[in-house]
Structures are given as C-alpha cells and as structure tokens.
Image (cartoon, rainbow over the protein chains, first blue to last red):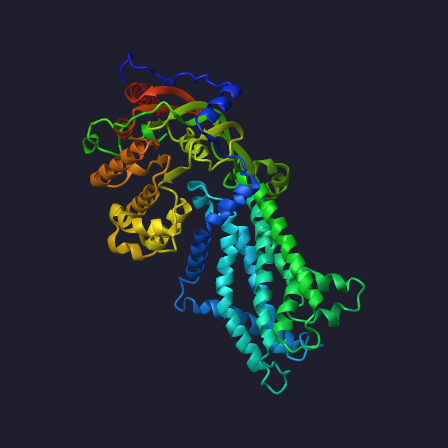
Length: 312
Length: 294
C-alpha cells in the first residue's frame, strides 16, 4: 500500500433530490402512471380476483397434490388420515367413555360425519393462517391480489375433502347395518350434503381470510390456533350431542347456533337418521346467514390489509 | 461487504463472456416510473441486540427475567431505504449497484409494488415483474406445474402459458427435469427456470435481481437478448448486480445506492468508475486493517 492511495473509502454525499408532490402527481397523470403500494378499490380488487380464477384453481389443485407427495402411499393418506382420526374418537369417546352414545342412535356415523366435516374446517383455518407466510416468496416476486392465497388454500382442502366425503358416506351407510347401531338408510335428502358442503366452504373461506390477515400481521397468533380449534371441536359437538349434554344449560343455545355446530348439524341431518339432528329449515337459514356474514366480513377484513402483506 | 472479500471487481462473470456492444433501445420521452422520497422500513422478528462482540454473559435466570423487559429487542424496524427519488423512461435500462445490504433489492421490490412504502410514493406504468434468484416458486411441485403457476401469477391466460410452455423449457435448458419436483433441481437449473418463467410474459417493467450472475456464457447471451426484447417492446429494465461488467454491458444508466440512499445517478461508465474507485479503496482499507492487526 502506497501513501498516495486513499486510506478511507469515500462515498459521494447522498443526492438531495426530492420532487415537488404537486409536480409528481401532475407528471404521473400526464404519463399515465399508476401509484403502487396502495390498496386497490374494492370493485377493481374483486374484478382482478375473478380474472385470476384459473390461477386459484391451479394453485389449489397443485397444493393438494403436493401435500402427500413425500410418502409411499401418497394420496391414500388424504383418505386414511381422517378415517384413522375418526376411528380413535369412536374408540375412545364412543366405546370406552360412552360420551358419544348418549342421545345418539348411530355413534359411528355421528362421529364420522362430525370428524370429517370438522377436519375440513380446521385445516382451512390452518391453510388461511399459512396463506401469506408460507407463500412469502411468491408474494415478494409477483404482483397479484393476495386474496388468491387464502381462497386457493381452502379450495385445496376442499379438493381433498371431496373424495373423503364418498368414504364418509360409505362408512355411515355400512355402520347402519351393524346390529348395535341405528339405521342409516339411503334417501333423497343425502343430496342436501352438497349445499351443506358449499355453505361450510364459504364459511371456512371467510375464516381463512380473517386468520390470514391476523397471522400475517401478528405471527404469534399462529401458536394459539391449535388451542382455538381444539376448544371449538369440543364446543361444536363433533363427538357428542350438544342437545344432550348442554341443552339443559341456559347458555346451551349459544353452542347449538354457533356456526361450526350449525354446519355439523346440517351435514348430519342430510346423511343420518338421528332424532337429535332432524331436517330443520331454520338451521339452513342460520347456516346461510353465517356463511354470508363470515365470507363478506372476512373478505373485507383481508382486503383492508392488502397493501401490508409481504412486509415482514 | 462481499465486494472487498475478493481480488476481482467482477468476480461473478468474466468480462470476456459478455460482448461489448452496448445495449441499444429506443428511449422515449414518456416516463414509465416515478419514485419520490421513498422510505422503506422492514419489521424483523427475532432480532438480537445489535452491538459488537458476543452478548454479555448472563445466568439463565437473568436471561429469563430480562426477556420481558427488553421485549422490544424481539422486533426491530430496519430502515432499508431512506429517501430515494428518481424517474425512468420507457426503453431505458438501468443498473443498480452498491455494496451488500445497501438496500438495492429492497428498492427493487418497492418499485415492483411488493413492499409497501413507509413514506413517499412510487408511480408505475403497467405491471412490473420482479425476477429474483431467490424467488422459489413451489419446491414440491414439478417444473411443469411451476411454469403454469408462475405464468398465471404473472397474469397470463392458461392458453398463453400453454403456447409459451415449450419456449420456457427450451430457454431454461432443463429438458427432462421439467417433470421432476423443483426441489430436485440444481441451483443453476432453478434459477434458469425462474428467469425463463418471468421472461415468458413481456412486462412493462422487468426487474432482475442478481439473476444473471448464474448460468453459463450461452445462457447469459440469451438473457441479454431477452432483455433487449423487453426494451424494444418499450419496457424498462432494472438490473441489480454485483458485477460491474454485467451492469456496464446491459445498462446505459446506473444508480449507486449506499446505506439506503442514492449517492450517484448517471451514465454507466461514469458511475461505475467512481464505484470501482470506492471498492478498491475499501479493499485497501480492509487490507491495511488486517496488516495492522498482524
């Protein structure tokens, strides 16, 4: 090192350059420029989301296919996991503790329908909470309405649910042939399962929107989700009859009419032949109401945070 | 500062790999980008106390007790970009240089609308696309799926993606690997595929973050041709690179960003000359320090 060379590296002073805001706005307008990093208007946002519907579908199907890719059985796990899950609950709550038998004629079918439906809801919540965080790379490289992510996350769960529903119906039907269990006859009302799934889907998407924004802004909430869903599981009568255990309390009606319990009852009233879950038009209206409230409310809530996603 | 750790200024690319013909494009008078007094702050979780040397030794109890009191250390605000203003025109290709951590990539992401500004404004014509080597699409899925997802995310229709599918595969030179999950790709293959996907749509503004530092000479030549296509379609190209040779061969204008601020904006030759002087001086200073410690 010779003495002539500079001892310390020098950086030129920063350019003190800012434009006049009025000039910026005028120039932006005359050049047809659009402002970035601001939330789009609701109508535009919905339109953009609609144009990306193929993207949503492809993303959902791909995710659903990729989810069990690292196992030997692959997609079989999509069916096996809920069956094993239900089997554990049937064994413990139905046959050992007998909680699932009180006030129920066909425990197996009751718990199977409850577990399969609740699992869809639970996994949708998880999909929503992961929507932004696990796709941060995508969020930080391409510009698209972020609502695509929670919507496709729940849609991926729905694609996993549909084949599982066939298994669910088969189990429910054959459990009716067992001597100790109530009959589960095939009937036209089984088709009501379709609107029940659609309503549950709409509701779950709404919840996923809410979770997506909450977890994107406060990652700590992600750790609370398992406790929340566990609590909801016991509060929604997945494995026992709410009427029978909570009906006598003055607050029992809250449990009965909260959305998750409503959707479980709708699904059961379509498939099962249970006196505790009769076909009830009021329940269908309540289910529709919850679906609309959560879907619209959740979407608006998510949209209001649109410009903040991808910042952490 | 990576630049001072090596003996070469252009350690990623041999200068002779790049032809010297300057990139040509017709620069119009119309602005395609206007950035005014841009500030970006990041929220960083899990940040530790910033300081020199390891933290003071504490007993387990002290650590536990102090955790609540100093909880603000868990989340830190990082002021990555501090008041940058500039404008760009259609057909321009602009290089962004600066040492590591100077805010180049953050600036690029903010221009692309991917990070909301804390203060100031960004005005853009059309839809910008950012092309980074770090942007993993979905590692569990095959290249073929990723081409579809990437294309749709960029706003192409499914038919357009299908039409361009073969082009993307050929451009990325991944051949049969297109049917394997992306996580099985070598890093070079992944980067080439990402570039090919991003380049399949001709965006109004193409931003390239270090993407060209990988790949062989042939791939870089193709990339350069692709960039020229974008510029001919009246697009603007931004290129972040540590390689001055790349920047000089691809860009006619260069922004030098230092500690989140714009310190120089001008013709590529001139800014690169100053930057090189700074890098050389930094390296000498580091050497002198190392000698002094001996």
